[in-house]
View 1 (cartoon, rainbow, N blue to C red):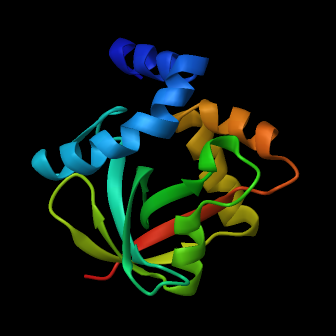
View 2: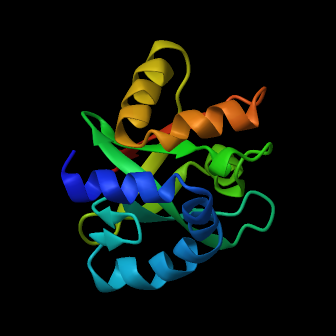
Amino acid sequence: MRLNEALIERTLMTPVGYQFLLHLAPRIDKVLIPRTKGRLSCAGIDKVGLVTSTGAKSGKPRTHPLALFQDTEGLVAIGSNYGRPQHPAWSANLLAHPECTVEFIGPPRQYRAELLTGDARDAAWAHAIDYYAGFDNYRINCAPREIRVFRLRPLS
């Protein structure tokens, strides 16, 4: 991790950083990410993408900025909901309608989401807390809820 990435991560893990992530960053990222071809977000370069899924209840398109990281089989998304007790709405959307569009490090592409369990989840989780140490704080804060971990596999 580069020094500037470490400073951003430490700042985002503060109480002020948490409030910024929770309330302002999603609004800014919905504007910033498309204008930078999926590269730049409030969390830095190549850290957050826009995931558009179909609403589990409404059936309407819903777009959410999500921290994403690449693995050998696609992208991984962590349903931490900032450590709050309930699962994020986007995770219910992906369970009900796994097909989604992701704008991350390039133009939007089609993906299919898969909820990870067992060893695959454990491996992705280990990578996630290496990617952003705040995920482990979220795990502690939302216990006993188990944070959902998704793999997004490209369709083409």
